[in-house]
Image (cartoon, helix red, strand yellow):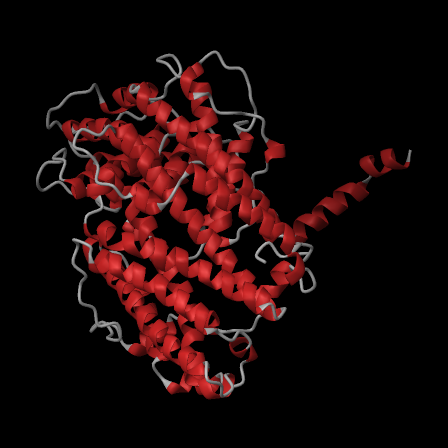
Length: 606
């Protein structure tokens, strides 16, 4: 009775008016016709821009063919037959004339299709331009404005509300483009990528891509499976690259990829079934290699501090063994490609190299945290062990491949490799350089305060000698890293910020002020080097530098400590996050727990 009274009484009306007054809710004076006219005006403006910017049919259809032949393997989220049919409906039949295109926008998803087309044109333009493929006429420029227009097409849709598969494909294509485009590599953090990836995953959830459903159209079923599993791979890669929490979990999906042997003309999303089998096979292998990484991520990202170092070390060992068996070593991949190599073989090689290098860098970052942890627990032997592992990867394994790749990447991965790998390679060199800087800081600090840290013994003269040699060799190695970054900046018009930051770090280490300001830093004094350890480090440096010296590719002369003429020292210093030079170990220890560490007597490295 009381509820009925409240519903029917004036009290309800009074409450409604009060709430409306508080939140300033008023009846809209805009009519439905006015809203419709506004949207029509925006659509007409966008339609005019699309008509103005699109090149001729000849260029468009040539680049579409180029995409599905060479670029598709890295953006396998489209169905070739369906996309060609939609493009025929929107821009006209596949012709190779120079006629002006008047796009026909009829369906709700047509602007999303146009957005995908614009991204394809820009991506293939970059690939064709770097490879001189000749698909684009002289004087035709397909610049970043195509991506801006694709963004405008995507913004026409309410991605928080009703979402279609085509809109998801457009948004995902834009994200994949950002992974390879030079203009999107000015930032080395993931402030925006985590949000973007989260939106893509939620869109996929809303479309049910995580569920294994039966569809009469086998090509559509295969496409949905690939989109979902590629999103899962992206999620894992972003997590171990930047420390982002995982958005996707195995509990939340039951869809699986089709087996490569089951792919035929009825379910392949590419007219080249061999290429489709290669794409699916690499996705399956990547997913299998990611499984042990997920275990490590779950332990590292546990902010409650419940991670056991012993469990973490065991999981790392499993990853090391698995990666060595399945992916091998970088030097084995770096073999010039034969002339008649197929697109699927190049695709396999590129994925293998990217996967191996990204996991190596990920493990190196974990080794860094473990080394600091063992310093905190006074386990000097294990601290030095993990720092040596970092140098084995960065100097011993990665540095010898830098010169060949920066000099002529197409010789090893084809012209498509130049587009797909360069951005990733650029960032990888920078991240490994930062780890080398950290090692160099410690070596130089011990050299500066040698008499304070080491007592006067006969063996200390050997330590001093090897310490001096290690510093010299590591600085020479850093010159090579910076030289390769500089070469990529010039060749592909990448940002110079990473090179400038590394130059500043090395400038700081040349000055006594840095060491005097950190005179009583216990974190830098705890780990004392031995002559045997420094000798091993010098051997690692000598072997890598020997490979570089004997390389057929010349090393550019680089003055590491000069600044760019157009960049002042004040500007560069304003860009530096000096926390990377902060040796407070509390942040490192909190990630693994203060009391959970590997005891010397139970260590795997006895």
